[in-house]
Amino acid sequence: MGSSQTVLPFKLAASDESLTAHGGLALLGEYLRAMSMRGLMNHELPGPGSAAGYDPSAHILPLVLMLAGGGRTLEDLRVLRHDEGLRLLLRLHEMPSSDATGDWLRRMGTKESGGLAGLQRVNRSVLRRLLRRDERMDYTLDIDATQIVAEKREAHTTYKGEKGYMPMVGHVAEIGVVAGYEFREGNAAPAAGNLEFLQACARNMPKGKKIAAVRADSAAYQATIFNWCEETGKAFAIGADQDVAVKAGIAAISESDWTKFRDGEIAETVHCMNKTKRAFRLIVMRRSREQDLFEDKAPYRYHAIASNRANEDAAATMEWYARRGDASENRIKDLKIGFGMEYMPCGSFEANAVFFAIGALAYNLYLGFRGIALGQGWERSQVQTVRWRLFQTAGKIVRHGRQLFLKISAAMLDVFAAIRERCARFMQEGGAVPETS
View: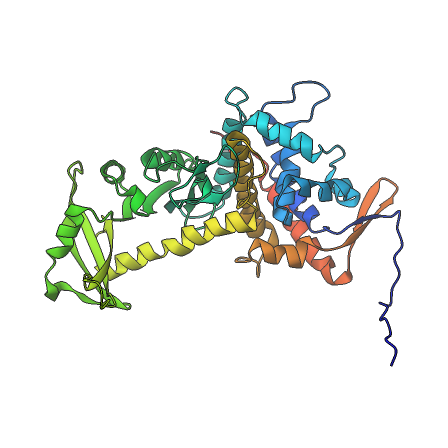
């Protein structure tokens, strides 16, 4: 029997119409316009060195759109550059090449340029605008370091044994936004500079809003941090470093004090460090360890946290600390995987620090877009879902006289119209008014 070749029932042809495969990104662009991001970026970052150069926003806005749209590398900017329909909608009339943007990242990373400081100010302004819309006054700050593997010549080996970087990220637990970040070398000690980082995050909060609680892993188990929290009225729950003193405190807990908790037991004692001004609670969870026939192991594995939270039992405090996993670790995963920060595009540390700052900015802007523009039903949608359901909406751009029209499927028309209406309302309410420092 002869074989037959299956032919798909369509043919290919080129079109000279203005088309876009990312019509939904125009909505994100409209939100960025409502936030007055172009003006903010151009105000806070150093301008081009010559009349022929590009404004800072010409580099940053395409990167934000590319990262939100699913791009990962500077080469992915080519997709936006070739999407003439989307560029027409967003008024990206002139767009730098990926090579030019790479050069700009390296230039902005130098101390002389002031680019990193400018991006910090842009991020702080966005954070403050978003928090102003929230009714809460007190917030929980979760901080954590995360490894980014990068086989770059200049990258250092992390404590996990891989070359790369180890940035620190602080999240506002209640709404998920990044309150602060610090791009660090891979060999940076996890415990280094944690107090200064916490203080910087606290300074980023808008007037009338404050960090009222702190959660962190054992890298922040430091007397200076505990004292700062006490002096500034912050509750804390921080993983305990199981040093000799902590182990002795655990050993002194009476067997009658242990109670059932999850798949193990929990108890607490009072503890202090040489330089802490006040004693704190040491809450300990233990689980049975499987006995190895060939090794003499302790019967339990222990996990301890230090806390000053009062008027609640040990289990409640441990549960509150455990929520840090969702509030911090998962959100860092969203930042890295959802917004392409698991890959650094440049060979130099300084250029990658700029790229990471833009990634944090894209993450916060997306959270604002989701909360302000998307409306009900999207509140917990990860960016991957929004890409599939919204950003990757095909459209045709038609010009009638001086008016541009984005033609999309009828099924998406009401969704797009509602999002645009919310963006317009946000701008009228003062969304584009910059937050003063």
